[in-house]
Amino acid sequence: MSELINRVAASSIVSLNMEEFYPQEERMVFDLADYLEQGLVLREKEFRAALKAMEWNQFEGKWVAVTCSADAIVPTWAFMLVCTYLEGKARGYCIGDLVVLELVIVEETLSKLPLESFRDRSVIIKGCSKVAIPLFAYGRLVAMLQREAKSLLFGEPCSTVPLYKKAKT
Image (tube, rainbow, N blue to C red; front, side, top):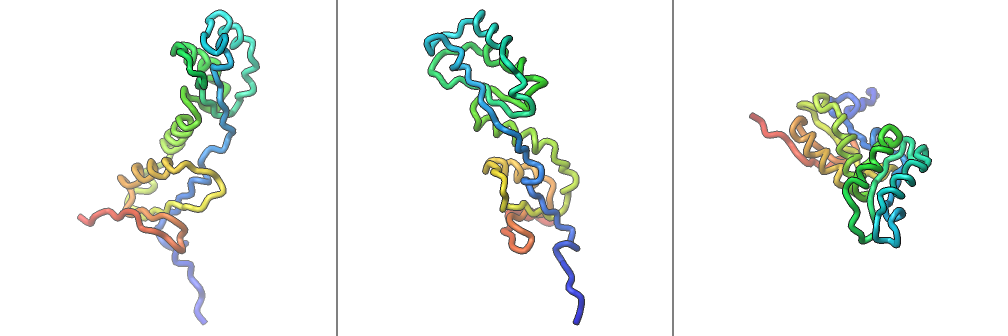
């Protein structure tokens, strides 16, 4: 009887599992609506005092979406001022809702991907995950890897769906 050989492990196929590197830190919302007088007006002096008195350590290492859930006209500088307090505390932040925050997280995370390691190789993008990966992250990943990889597949090494194959030149 001959020895069993794992051809997948021995191949040059790269398996990419976003679960292994996608940030899992807590996501939080900083809502400027909480600082509006009668739900309508932001008073600069009071707002600045409230921010100065706030315990900013609660945002330490977390991702924060700075938004306003009230239907009020809030000056742009107010959002920006909150960001100055989050800098150096939060893992990352954006002005927008949680969907926008997730877009920022995807871009930041995938920008660190060593694309050269996928050059002219077959890449399997793993699909099953215990971690919630937003669908747009997969689209962004395809856009980045298609420029480098010889082929892209989705699924598990034992069962993949072909997505892309570079034309032979």
